[in-house]
Amino acid sequence: MATTLSRIKLIEESPADSVNEPMPLDHALKWVSKYDDQVDPRVRVFFAQSAYLKCIEHTESDMVNEVGGVLIGQVRVDPLCPRPYILIQDILPALYTDSSQTHVTFTQNTLVHLNHELEEHYPGKRIVGWYHTHPRLGVFLSSHDTWLHRNFFTDPTHVALVVDPYYRHAGIFCWQPGNRFDPTHYVGFFELSDVDEDSIVELDNLTPVIEETPTPCGDALLEKGVSR
Ligand SMILES: [Zn+2]
Picture 1 (tube, rainbow, N blue to C red):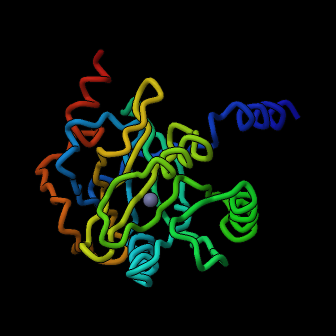
Picture 2: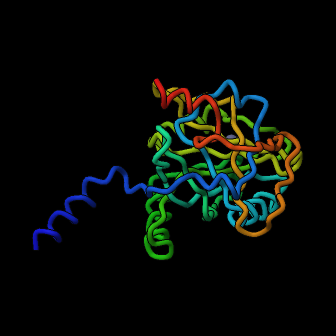
């Protein structure tokens, strides 16, 4: 009886239902943007190839209008790292009925609906961010996008992925310490090999980094954070 009670208590105290697991660096390829060393993201982002392929299929489905949806996965904590990381494991396209819509938006109702879908079909997973496209416009967040992120994706682990399917550009915008959210400087991600040992990412604005012995936290900056 006592064991059961303490177990329940432990679950309740677990911060934001994160999963304890080392970063899967052995099965990941790091992609960086030209801004990576200027951004101090609150989370590292691991993007499973299976989810990436679904995302690209959706983002390339319309080369004129913007499309978007939410990123689904887990928030995880590597025991050796001070900051959590997210693993994007799936996507859920948001459906828009208004064809005159020029930009992607989420309402409270959209998010309630998506959360319901999540509970029904993706047990144990949660919304870790959102994605949308900017066909021929490039990777940035408009003032509306920024407003949306600041109002609906307030958890420090929430990210915003922007894809330009025409130019094959993509980037991820993250919360930074001090509630900073930069709408122009984006980072890359770790491509997690769950489909193919070789990379399946075809992006012209990100560069793969081959590290012989990856550091536990994925980069030196975070390691410095540990020793401080
Ligand atoms: Zn936008």
